[in-house]
Length: 477
Ligand code: GDG
Image (cartoon, rainbow, N blue to C red; front, top):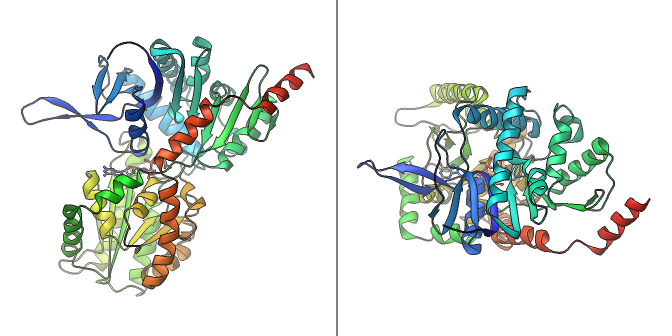
């Protein structure tokens, strides 16, 4: 790859993972995960460049090409991975932005590393962006990049999208570095959120913390306007819809059901093993249904895929132990020879295997305590072209705003989860079709292409007339 780019994605991670073959040769493979799933197709179409860390510490890589994407690695040292990534990003910001469901850690050396690494990303972007390029910065690990980049390159059009929730002012206020963080985000021309609630939390915060006025979606700075808006992320509906029509995937789905003993109800959970995902709550509800006899032990099987995640962060290690203890207890009490009611897998799977699981499952169980969007819920919908299957969905997932025909639950209310699990299992085919048809209509029309195009159109469109006028009057007033 050579020269500069007119379109850049800046994200913590490059969208690839390195694999080493039996003969010792290394190659790159597109990695799983929400962000990658969402953006890779857009990148390929626009022939841009993607800046991010490649996943190995203390190693510098030359730019390379993969799957039609130009990839530029931003290096991180072992200490930076610990302090910037596992520390400030995942032990401070992640819990703080997810309703403090785990206590956030506030440590100054983590913040210093976060600032230093954000500056490195900004410098790298400034170096490869063409004059007037569009730069799209992704997610909570890089919230200082917009302002740092604007300082270096005022000619750029800078967008930022936050994949996780933006918290209410009262929670954000705890952050010792709250002012720097908000000023970092305000370096963007457009700050995108999953939901309008996140955007309005951000605008209120800007007024209270920095005294900035806003009107509608626009925040008025001295010399420019920052637009804040919701862009609910979605999935590649077409890819999944095609995948589940593949005979190999259909056969695999049948095999999965028969390997599980052809239960009346196959329930499925697919999550990164994360304390925000409410895995414990759903297993508790399922265990109680078995215990109180609402479900016979051989009537339902719950398959829980818990993909390994952030295993060096203390809170995640504890969570793994808790979940595995809980699975062991429930299975210990209710298993029969050759039949375990919970099938738990702490492993990662290929996309096709995942699609086969979605196709095999009667009830998809998505119960986060807080989630920016939750792509798994939308992936399940995309795989149900027969218009059957039920989605049990937490009210605290961003996806609940769009998927109103799911079986909505409050995951903190175990009785409610039990009730909705049973309702989903007992629903008539007619009822399931009615709900699924409406939800599929939503996901087909608002897929990931539409999400990315709407964001980029908003970023590239000229600033509104009213915004310019308002800035002028604010400055003169
Ligand atoms: C963040 C926000 C927001 C999971 N296990 C495997 C696998 N996955 C894929 C799923 C899905 C993705 O990972 C997970 O996306 P989610 O949206 O459910 O959750 P987060 O990872 O927390 O994502 C979230 C998202 O960003 C996008 O903005 O929706 O709220 O927290 O695509 O299918 N993929 C494969 N094997 C696995 O074992 N191949």
